[in-house]
Amino acid sequence: MNEPKIENGFAVVEAGSWLIGQGQPAATLGKFSVNSLKGFIVPDRRELFVLQSEGESYLSSSDRPFLTHLTSVESLSAVSSKILAAPFEARKEAKLLKIIPFSLRDAMPVTRFAIGWVVTATKSRIKRIVLKEGEVLCVKREAAVAWTGNDPVGVAGRVKLRDLFIPKRKTSLSLDFYGPQIVWVEGSNGV
Image (cartoon, rainbow, N blue to C red):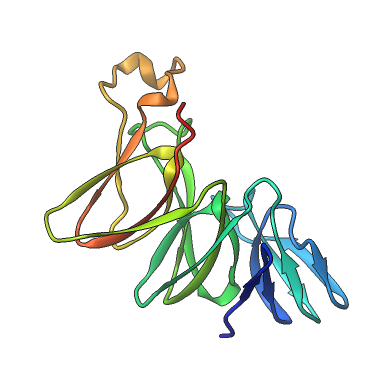
């Protein structure tokens, strides 16, 4: 599986099948097609697409200019909306990560990959944090980018029954990661 080249704010991938984010590719040499993901229940269908290209493809996002090449020797989970490119064959599954229990309103699509790499596009730089056994890391919902190991636990402060039906402010939503694992986070917008 060929690694991408990141240069001048673009991720360059060779000809083949790639999992790409919305609005991609910016440019491609030769013919290409972009198709939606197939399946009955596909939580990341709105965020990710399949690129088939005959030549090199240039991927970049003007809204999210910081590109990071993440590699892992174990399975890697990434927030689907922050994925720019990944090998299509490495995608294992997708699911909705529920921050408020039993509520789909604040759930975010997460894509899990087998061993390999993922290129993310974020609004700010990414920090890699290694958690040791027994350590806990609390991350704001919008700052989470990717992680290895077990999925985080959603924390919504005090949740009442009416919070499941009546909108609640999103400022108190966060994710708790439990070590050992590696977590990648980006800067928070301060909201």
